[in-house]
Image (tube, rainbow, N blue to C red):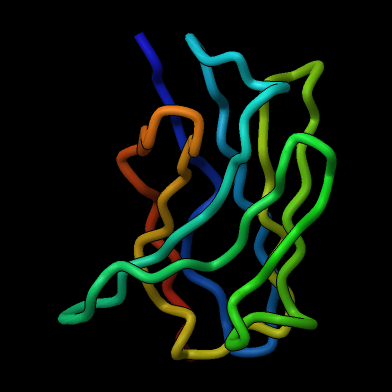
Length: 113
């Protein structure tokens, strides 16, 4: 019923930027908090960012000032703009619909020279 599809991942050099997208279907998108989590190799999945239905946002300390989460309710899409990327940002990034604890399959971001 609920499907989240991430896109925009890839290989980027340190200091570079990427913009991730998550297209949602089957969700009451405008009413739900949406977010991004990531999982690096050998590590637990961790919270990255959340944007609530009223537009309020929160970020993990590790990405504050570098990442920006946004949403376009008309397109049922949530974005993660990632700037000043570091090698430690390398991970599979997952989109989350907090309304029902739904997850996408992830998109891989690799930050490397």
